[in-house]
Length: 490
Ligand code: FAD
Image (cartoon, rainbow, N blue to C red; front, side, top):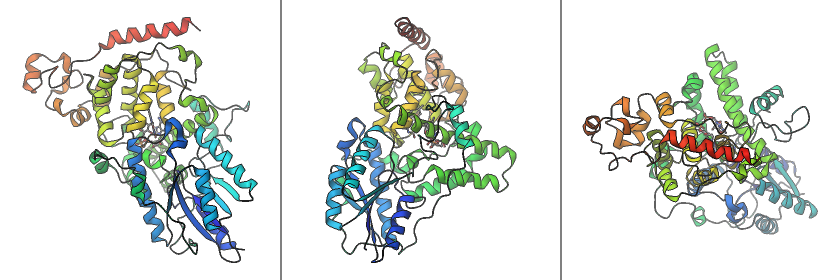
């Protein structure tokens, strides 16, 4: 009997380490009359609710789909692109192609889980085989539990339980050219451009120059990281002035590489005789990948947290609406160089260093008392790696209202953070060029520079670069007073 499988690619936009693809090819090979595999991408922004892809993510998605489509063509296959409600589109495709199975990669966001459950049960009711596969995580969120059988809310024991489990399964190779059986007739497809994922006005020059979306780009990024930066990861990962991290986050978000591939690539190097010193850094790196797992664990078990604080008392936190301050933060015009550098890096290349994400987020929620949800929404639109699980974790961590969060009373001082992690100000000089000529001593606090120093650097404060929009120590006191109000109302 012929067997045609729709391979519904969602956020596993790759051919290697893709068990759904392997299973679809095996199913076709096992069928007596010869089967077929039809790779499909469905654009369905309406089904993601408030969390449909932001502008920077759409840019990435366009290029990732282009790369995937080319890889499939190189193997004699195609990517069928459709638009509409997923269930309806799958039904149409089943009618058009005679497919009797749909395989897909698992997503863990609340809206996706609801939709996928509905689709799985409706397809099975109609005798269509519906199967989902893990392409995205080392460990399924429901497999990792405390001794009491509960989900974890603290990272360290979570990661210990994960690493005590059997190592993640081996990865599988991308299929060879010619091994992806095509249908006799391909269903019709949108052209990628018709999805209109690219911006109408081209603001993406900086993003284009910084990134290579797609599976090949991800493979090159990890190789480069393993050859170079992993050697000093644990120290350099906090330094925004150094290229010390893997920059794999957008590739991971779109599933161009999976954490299993990272795990095995890193442990292969460890087992191939890495020095004791380098091993330490390699395990630190895997631990960071563990934070991503933790983020997915949390969003799966606490689906409400994309919009609401995990700690309910924070629902009463007296956040302020302050459009002017929010705008200054978004544009990188707060008068605090480490904050402004981060926000401008984000605007230019759609990504920001993790240490700086913490600094800018803390500044928003503590110095400006603007809600973490407002910050998360801006990140959502501007990050190429915008990811509901990791963004929620990052913002709730900073705001002190999430799992294993930094306590709210611990307020980052943006000037000291800058001095510590960008000691010569190279990061600030790169992204805030109007400060480039300022002496090292004042690079993180231009407002304290004597008039002649500012003059020598060609800076008039308030004209070339803003004066600080808040006084940090006063803002800190206000933040702690705001915290007291929720403590009292508990
Ligand atoms: P590396 O240091 O090379 O780490 C490797 C991988 O581990 C990353 O690619 C990422 O997948 C994972 N990882 C590392 N640190 C974290 C972390 N703290 N939390 C979760 N996963 C982590 N990450 C996103 O992928 N998408 C987001 O939308 C996002 N929003 C954030 C918002 C805030 C306020 C904060 C503080 C952090 C956020 N992060 C987010 C986490 C982190 O900043 C990025 O994953 C990291 O900067 C990506 O750079 P990298 O790939 O070079 O990281």
